[in-house]
Length: 117
Ligand SMILES: [Zn+2]
Ligand SMILES: [Zn+2]
Image (tube, rainbow, N blue to C red; front, side, top):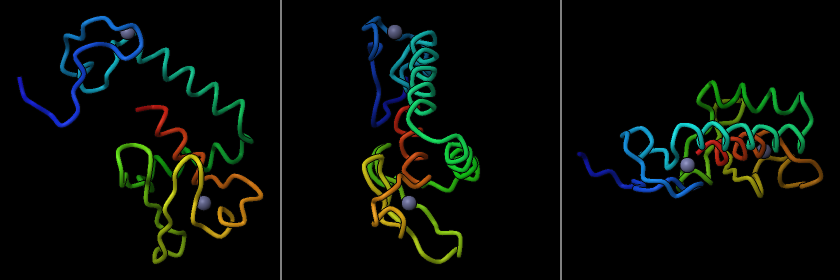
């Protein structure tokens, strides 16, 4: 057995003992992990506009979010490829995010990733 920085001996959801290396790394058994992911997806779909979720998912697929602290703060490279933003579910340092009027898709991407952890 290898010692990783974050390992879980029990499922975070149902507290059952985790046996597979994959479950131990994820912190959930396979069934709970699926349920957590489904709940996360439902929460995101209920909270944000579909076209913004699509943009957020595209950003995630492109590897556009680099985790800075755990799975909650990320660095995003702007579309010009030069500027970087810091984003968490609660806020973003991009122009739209600083205005704070609407939730930018960076924050939605951070939300999705923090839930999928
Ligand atoms: Zn479980
Ligand atoms: Zn943003």
